[in-house]
Amino acid sequence: MTIKHYFFSILFFITIKFIFAQDTITVLQYNLLNYGIPVYGCDNSNNSPENKDSYLRTITSYVRPDVFTVNEMRVESYDTTAVDRILENVLNIHFNPAYKRANITNLAGSHIINMLYYNTEKFTLYSQDVIPAYRDINVYKLFYKSDDLQENNDTLFLTCIVTHLKSSQGADNEAIRAEMTSSIMNYIEENNLFDNVLLMGDFNIYTDQEEAFQNLINPANEEITFYDPIEQIGNWHNNDAFAAYHTQSTHTTYNNCASSGGMDDRFDYILMNKSVKNNLFNLVYKTDSYKAIGNDGSCFNESLLSCENVDLSSELKTALYNMSDHLPITLKLTTDKSPALFSRIMPRTGLNVEIKNLNFHEFELQLVNAAQGLNTIQIYSSLGKLIYVQKTDKSRVTISLNNETGIYFMKVVDARQRINIEKLVIIKE
Image (cartoon, rainbow, N blue to C red; front, side, top):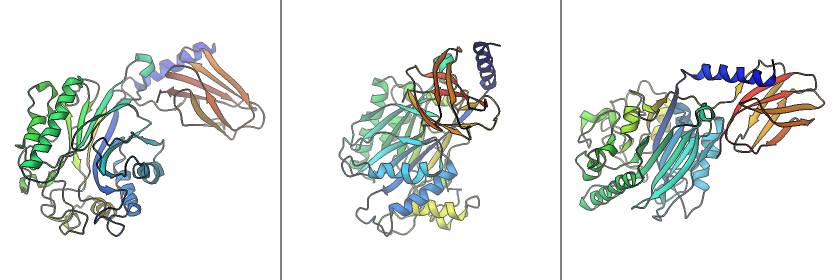
């Protein structure tokens, strides 16, 4: 069998393998309560970044998000210290491959901003934009690294609109919230965002009758309507009928940082548009996956530590209580596409190949247990064309390619003629 026919056979096998595959994408939204820089009453005694990193590691290990959006990231100007802490001290401590983040925006000049983190195994940040408002409203567009990206020249996009609406009751604050959500809906319509869109954040809305919420669920153009995945619309404030859906506050006593009052408001949301609701673009909400993590319905007007929460470990409950006065919101999305993973085509023969930092044009290759002597590295296109060859006696090699995104096959032969073949998908970052 020629090498071209051999790789055609491999490609056929992979196509069949994934034709019925389905992937699940986990989304997490969280108000982090002045994360990163001590300020006002939120200082190292009650809001220590080091302690919060530990709590957040516990929470993200429990959820394992692919898309993680946050509010109340404290910044001074465009300093990246706080936003990078989550990468360095939380997500990239125990997750592999590495997470990345979006760029900082702060057109409003606020001391608290939004941010998006994403699993680079599944997503690439395609673009980002800002809707000017009282606080920046961030629009992050991700594309999914589907296994069939090269074969079908297609993938799915997910747009995450992250907002932190003005807090507190009163006509003036309600007017600012209404203006902010009106700007969101105008942006969606003007930019024709009709594919997969999630709207998430801390809305600070007390009832569905508030204009800010009506702008989202009853717009003039019904095609851009947002939907509550759990269909729990109503007067949420201090209403025990919504006890299982409240997200604030985890505290009953004021500690100079976290709000008090117990669990009696539903401020935090992930809403979905028509496309996600009806699976119009290869992505759909997974039924019953939406949760306010830590709220089992027994917390009404109570501290999170006073609730039953029999399904929570004491470690997780403590982390949720100390991390923020809000609970994180999570949901899952499903797609019939498959993630673009590195795949070993042949069984291990004693030669192990590790691929790191795979991106457009360049990646790092480490040969583990390779025999001493010259090792041969060959890379073929999905059509079996040899596009790269190198002979080296080094165990760590940086490979640079000048090819388009797509599926490739790498054959490594060490000095003892042991063979390792890997499938890899190169995505432009």
